[in-house]
Image 1 (cartoon, rainbow, N blue to C red):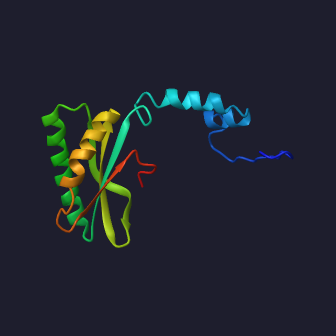
Image 2: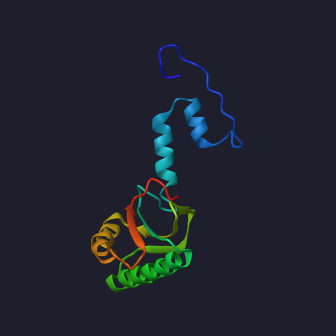
Image 3: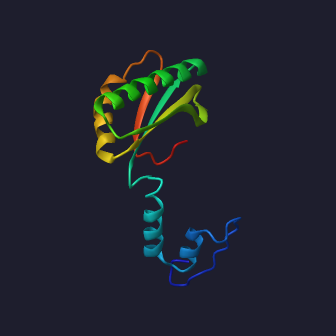
Length: 145
């Protein structure tokens, strides 16, 4: 426990040697943070690199997929024309494919934080109102669900 009394923690896992558990058992927060920072460098994940999740949703699954493909193609042309060092992944169905009667597809853009920022500033006003599809730009998303 964290309080003055202390306490016991029981962890059930298939990965008892996972670094997070080892560091937690030793109360080594600094060691854990250093380990995680190193792990996130290759392959690069935030905070070492920027991530943009572009979620396209529509009432019909076909429309969401079609619009996501269009957004991906548009983003790819933008990235190429500007010579940006960004990696485009997708489009693909979101892990939670349907929320509130809307089908969801997403495109991920990964790369240097500054270049992700340029894409967001340019793309946000231009991706509004794409027919009946809704487009949401989520920079450095907490979750990809």
